[in-house]
Amino acid sequence: MGAYRLPDQWTIRLEYTRPPTGLSLNDRPHWATKSRNTAMVRNDVFVKVRAAKVPALERIAVFVTWYVFDGRTRDSDNPAPLLKAIYDGIGANRGISARIVEDDSPEYMDKRGLTIERAPGKGNAFFEVRIVDLGDAA
View 1 (cartoon, rainbow, N blue to C red):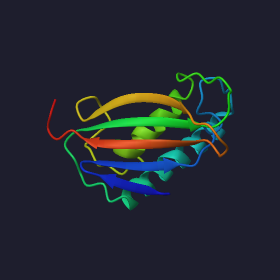
View 2: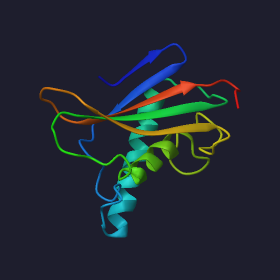
View 3: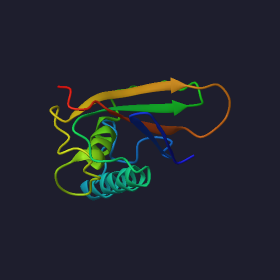
View 4: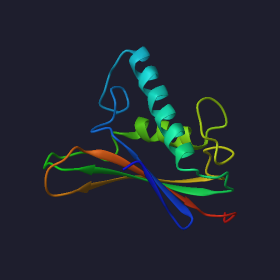
């Protein structure tokens, strides 16, 4: 499942089972690895947001959910660098970005952080990004 749309919101799915190397606060990779993976995430988000036909908007809220299927403990703070790459891929004012809002600053984007959902059964973990149109509400 790639993307789907509900009234005033769009959802994309990122098929990462965990944050790519360098995009977790626990990682200590070479700077080039982190840079390459940040660009990869931004590009993946850019492509999926464009494929979902998300229009240019005044203000949005972004919700990120990490769906996992095992009992391992995960800290919702550690993927902060991944979240930054996702937000930049949606609305940064430079670099690889879908630019659906002017910038990823609080004026244009309400970043709701990461929620971890444990689902019973088997499967591969993934990240779901939901973009909600807030109109011109401040």
